[in-house]
Length: 444
Image (cartoon, helix red, strand yellow):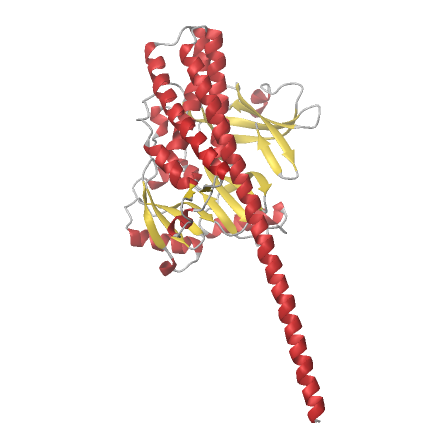
């Protein structure tokens, strides 16, 4: 019996050691795979920053040409180039991990620059630019040169390995000597910006549209740091004591900035509403389908009081999916009332949330009278087949909003097109091309 007991103990110890080795190997592989995924994501950030740097170089060059050109044709060509590159730069900026709440001034500059250039490209065909327009161009060009020079310096440091695309909370940790965070350096760049000029033109980033009141915050009381912490805890399900108040952000939507581990939020200082949230953990190998992710996103929004919403487009990348939702009133989809959610496809957890468009625009609207759908269909090309139609409010240049008939169509090659016709006049006002594949939809 004694010998059998001893053999049994030896066998159990052997099994335990084997199990520990297997578990250790699994954990090692898991951490290694996680590190590989993180590096893959950071490589995407680095590509986005390289694209941003390249776009700014092109913008700087095109602005110099624009200021020196006298021919309407050349002015129009250079202005169109600035507009196109500014659009690309905004897209690249939005893909950086710190863009949503750290670089508001850079995003506002690119938006205003692009729309001003678009307005100038249209105006150029009707005569030479005025002295005021050239003065504004000079100020915008000065900012472009500052930003371009700084981006080139940062790109060189990034290529040399002396700079990291780090998360905000990494700023609180000790970094190796000589190593900096790109987000911090970009903030230093914004400090060098001259004052953004007041621009008078017909575009969504005109002075009147650049600083609109946040509709959802009208009449709401200011909240303290403690109130912001309570709002963040209620939104995330985390405990209030988990949160640290990092500071305050200004701009068109003044907020409290808070963090809890991997989670960072902005809570409006008026009303205490969550403007956006980023959870840096997640985004690994996904198992959920887009349909399953969409259902989880709907549930997340409903639990937080967002009920009259409708999804539009989604894109899937690097283990996560980004979904867009918009407000719906009386069957009319309101595209300015925008909510964005990013879900981790491995767990279904929401790792990104943005409600800035919703906070700025959502309200009860008066829906004006419309002409018949049949009259509006005349705006759709005969080469397109109408698949579905409905009413939609869209943002437009020169106007805050426009009520339209939205026609989803198919061309002769089976590709989808969206046509918008003014619901009061039947005039075609916008056409969008949809590029669709297994990873989602790109709207052009």
